[in-house]
Image 1 (tube, rainbow, N blue to C red):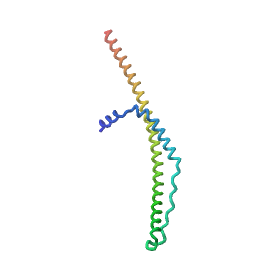
Image 2 (tube, one colour):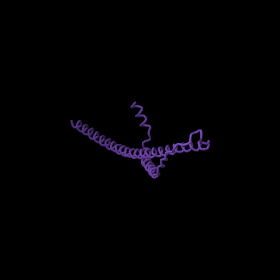
Image 3 (cartoon, rainbow, N blue to C red):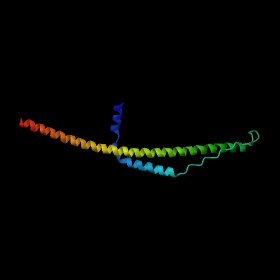
Image 4 (cartoon, rainbow, N blue to C red):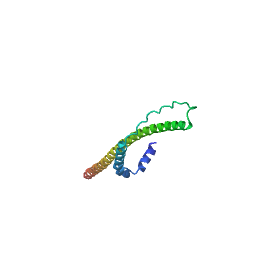
Length: 138
């Protein structure tokens, strides 16, 4: 399983990911600001059941009562969807910020690895040169 993960990680264009991380974070912040400014729809007042029975009510009154009930349920669903959209937007913003931090740390680690590789090369070169000089004088 780790071999598959490594091959997937090799395929990812990390230069593009790193260069686009600030754009993603800014987009998430803009989305959060745009969604956060909108006021959630007002929860509808519960619709009272008609006092007349279905036998006495006219077909028009029955249709209006059904439509009012459907409208109330739609308004409730819309309010719930708006709340979910706000939560999703907040989650995307936090994920974008975490992605940005991750990219910064990966970049810092890449620079550290380059410096460590350079230091290892120099240390190895000095060690080989010392060994050659020591064996040359023997």
